[in-house]
Length: 473
Image 1 (cartoon, rainbow, N blue to C red):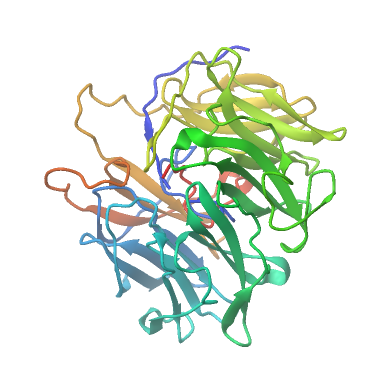
Image 2 (cartoon, rainbow, N blue to C red; image 1 turned 135 degrees about the vertical axis):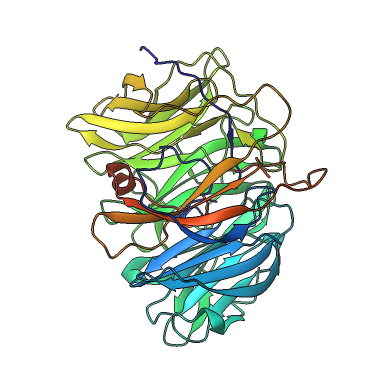
């Protein structure tokens, strides 16, 4: 297979999740360089200057004729801005939350069926932070609110998404890296209160590990699909065993073969896609779900090949077993390790239909730049790998001074104008493993809402309901 080798720039990513991920990682957002360059944008609308000392996820939510943005301002105070879509004037409120240096502490939002806004964020193994408006679509009525009241002292990766019958669902990790369970709550609209969707955690590390997710994603078959990787400790090299599950109702889960799964799902009873060992080159944030034209789920990830080089693999359940096919032939080993938010040298997206008999997968590589991979749909074998139409960024200067990078967040909602989508853009320094930087912070950058034409890439790539940048805590 021939590779089009092009100069690239190392991505500085960190985490959600992200989806829904990017949602546990249930279904919308991303903060980082996107896998594809942004489409040609129309005139951006400034919100206000924001913190740029390290990356952390912001949220954009377009709902009906209104738009909401949740973010941290230049003094790292949590804020929410709102506007009517035909107005360029923002109404801004401050919430009583202060950001530190942790890039995991993104903020996310949802609007329920009656128009009340729900918001959660600024947590990394911290007590639950949750606000809800007391008046529909009124950001001045945000109040701190309780949720269920149990297993809410060590919360990370909050995500809102819509479940069966359009119910509002909230999921998060209870615990810490290497020792955590995944909790699911559902909102009772009539009672305006939350309860457990599942009596037990969906997954449990049994005190020995935790799961990092992509999904649940509502697939083209109407089922909810989920993939994840287990991690034994805060060192990102300890990721192992990508897994898969599906459900019609988010309560009863089964394997790819249709066998029921007892809850909580553990490593012992999980549907393992590929028994990649710890230290085998797989990492949370780069285990992704996609689908082919026959609605079959495909789990994508990278691991070391027999020569110790990092390669992309795509796996699909066929003839009673998971079949994994190597998709790249890179002569490069990404030897990641340690905790905190790290620089991601490789980022991969999920597989999607492209043309009759063809699947497409996009991503970025520190050595080979942005890439577009075409796969034979029947065999999953790679047919070509090439750069996208736009050129990659110029390499950073050969010095130790970090430079500003553009961050983007996709819309958690949807524009009412046909063929149009919105995103957030701003600039920050790269991640610093969640540690304070020495010296003065950089000046704030301007947070912008960008309106641009919707592309095929926007249509086929599922949104993440939490930042979908990879993370290593």
